[in-house]
Length: 162
Image 1 (cartoon, one colour):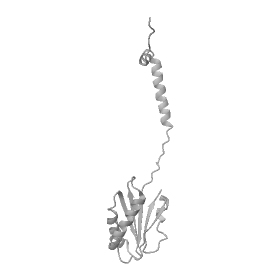
Image 2 (cartoon, rainbow, N blue to C red; image 1 turned 45 degrees about the vertical axis):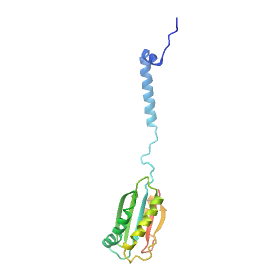
Image 3 (cartoon, helix red, strand yellow; image 1 turned 90 degrees about the vertical axis):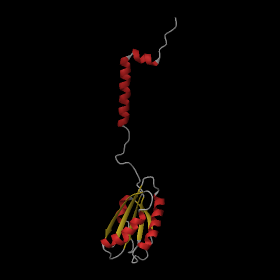
Image 4 (tube, one colour; image 1 turned 180 degrees about the horizontal axis):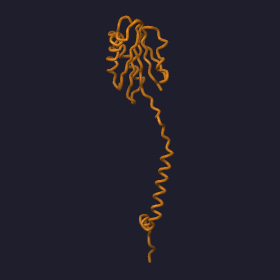
């Protein structure tokens, strides 16, 4: 007589209680592993963004919107990868915030923003002498105070790095 060979499926068919217990153990191990997975409530994502600030002393918010923000927004809107443009105008100041797609390199975008600003200079008021764009890296928390130290009539380009 030949010894009976036992294959894996036959083992589980002959022992249904052991099969159920093994299945329950695998499910419990899976639930335990799922509960211990590290999940951050806010993922670490660096959103590529650039802020452009322009000052024209004595100009009203309406004048800043019409003569400074609109030409800059038109020029900046042609940059590929821009997902959102927001601007705010106040007495003698305009701030334009550009957000780019996540795959966009912020250094390359800053160069293209610089080129768009240079292209729009002819459409900006002549009362903005000495507009030399400057670029500096800053964190998200310091965006509100970016151009507080700029001289009147300067245009600042700042990219948000983190």
